[in-house]
Length: 292
Length: 155
Ligand SMILES: Cc1cc2nc3c(=O)[nH]c(=O)nc-3n(C[C@H](O)[C@H](O)[C@H](O)COP(=O)(O)OP(=O)(O)OC[C@H]3O[C@@H](n4cnc5c(N)ncnc54)[C@H](O)[C@@H]3O)c2cc1C
Ligand code: FES
Ligand code: FES
Image (cartoon, rainbow over all chains, first blue to last red):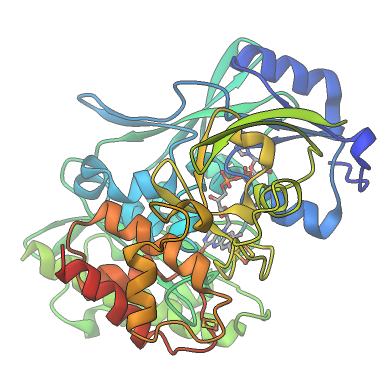
């Protein structure tokens, strides 16, 4: 994206009522045009790096704001706000890690504007909804000039601020397969409750029968260049009979080797590693007890 | 390029030419001269710029003005029922000593109005959560929570 501090004469704000016009316009302008949804990241970027020549707002497009349920999946429109997600009854019931994560982003004012697709497409390693959506095997539906394709969220992030999205791509839907037997949770570690970018976050989804973990997914934020699934650790949980924290010593060792966080202004690598272990332990115990 | 914006602020229709780079906050303050809405951080952190759009509190510094096409915005100037009067929320803030320097007050009061729209009788937790995006450097929040609680009790 080229940002050049456009003067009012060279800066254009466009919005179209259809996806097709929006996507075609984006393709015609290439890397001097930027999509804006809730604009809570876009306006922070423009303050830091200047304006691109074109901002293309999605806000005149109807029908991208919904949470729909059918037998096997829940589909979330890309412009659904984080407030709507955190308050959606179906998401609270079926995808509690997502409702918790969405409800902890920024502040009420931010959540009232911030969209779920914006949170993912901004591709911050700290994006709060990403770990939750990763453990739920989320897929994204992407529109480009009349064509649609579906990609796995686990293949969507490339690095800080980078995704697989190409010119003209617009994320239109997040698809969540309904998990019938799993229980799940999300924890965000930060210095305070509101307006805090995570030092570390973790989401987990597990299937438990008679204290034995039958399947597990774990994902973390703020510990790698992108939100990541922590697969080795998850695998080490499968088959475990969890009675107390002693049963988790091995898994805690594994997560500390599997993840290699860095020091930054929010926290040190050591603190992050420590909290990964603590959070893993607390979360597994919480979920096992909820099923007992 | 300047662009036309049609929207409603405090029940009054506006049709104005705006600089497309401007946020809603800048248009309110600079173009409409509605300076009751304050600019603190300009980056979504402090809540001083809070206004209500479609019943929800929003940071006006985090919204492109042109995204307000066809929308209805309420600012602190639009809260009072009549000119020369103040709104019960404002009165409660005065009565409870919830205002010191007053810089956070317009935003805090707009968030309060959104809290009361969402919850008929908000609990202390809902109040604290509801104002968690509004920073106050003076009061320590206790008197603000008291003021909002008094409104919930009188409902
Ligand atoms: C004060 C403050 C606090 C914050 N706190 C948090 C926090 O705690 N946790 C957190 O995760 N985030 C936080 N954020 C970041 C931000 O609010 C979220 O990432 C938000 O979900 C972004 O959504 P948006 O709709 O505002 O995105 P926008 O700003 O509109 O867009 C973000 C990016 O995604 C692209 N984009 C948006 N929609 C689409 C689409 N449909 N298809 C393709 N590309 C698209 C845009 O081009 C842009 O690059 C905070 C931001 C602020 C200002
Ligand atoms: S001025 Fe908008 S949040 Fe601070
Ligand atoms: S009264 Fe001074 S900041 Fe709140």
